Amino acid sequence: MMISSVHATLSLFRQSNNSLRSLKFCLPFSSSAASLSANNLSRKKSRQQPVLSALEYGGVKITRQDVVKDDDPTNNVPDNIFSKLGMQLHRRDQHPLGIIKNAIYDYFDTNYSNKFNKFDDLSPIVSLKQNFDDVLVPEDHVSRSYNDTYYIDPQTVLRCHTSAHQAELLRDGQTHFLVTGDVYRRDSIDSTHYPVFHQMEGFRVFVPDEWEASGMDGTSFAAEDLKKCLGGLARHLFGDVEMRWVDTYFPFTNPSFELEIYFKEKWLEVLGCGVTEQEILKRNGKSNNVAWAFGLGLERLAMVLFDIPDIRLFWSDDERFTSQFSKGQLGIKFKPFSKYPPCYKDISFWINESFTENNLCEVVRGVAGDLAEEDGTTTSP
Ligand code: PHE
Image (tube, rainbow, N blue to C red):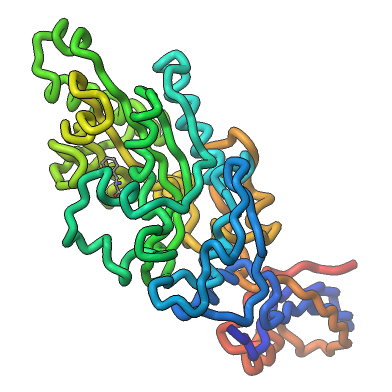
């Protein structure tokens, strides 16, 4: 998007009397790597944009041709979505999403003595079967539509949730696992919605001994364990928060719940979870077991924990964003900055006694309107 009007990061250097004032302007470039360049994401295919031609996932090369098929009407993946495929924000230890992933890992490692196996580079390209059939999503479910999901071809999609990996990992013999990854859903874009976001899936399988010893049936036992586990995780991340469980529906769990936490005077949904449908276990060689599963949205948690006001910021490579976070630091609060890239112009001029700062601000606002941002004033020697 072109920004044509003047925007200013204004800082005044003041001198007494016959002062020399120096003014810093910040003029936006049209399409530089602006912090919110993600704003430009168009729902239509754009063929002009230069995009990365190949990327790797868990050692497997993925090229643009594998994902974007210009003349295939059964493909609805635009270039700007393909360009997100190799970013792997959740694998960057200094990025808010990586910091949260690691904090959740710490919780599980500490409380379950490293029993949970972690996967964070499974390819987001999955079959229709993995994404939907394997987790019992009904044939007529809205999430299967071309309107909601990115289809590479009629049998292949960009995963719309990390639950797409449950079945293959179960078949692989995994009984305790965490899967973190980028997930894709066609959606409008605003400060809380973006068509790519990150989820972490958790899955735990129990053997009969575990619930039989408790005197409970398997389902009640798993449900209680699940709530205890996730309540502890919420406290690990948020401290002593108020939380509540809300009954809900997912095709792959029964009973199903959402966990909401009370944050800034609002109840906020942070994850979905439940006791895994027996059919999923049966199909994957675990007939005599019960299991629980959860899926949480990393951006959601990060926005709350770091005070990040806009989901698009996660994609920013602007140093004013990235430099604010460090590995292992959960308590940092994000400090907002101009959404335009800085471009300093020093303008110096002589003024007379009658000059006031407000005069100058008015001149600037006359040109720039509300795009002018003030950084405060500084007196120069
Ligand atoms: N896959 C669900 C979603 O994306 C979350 C979920 C995962 C719910 C596992 C229950 C169990 O909304």
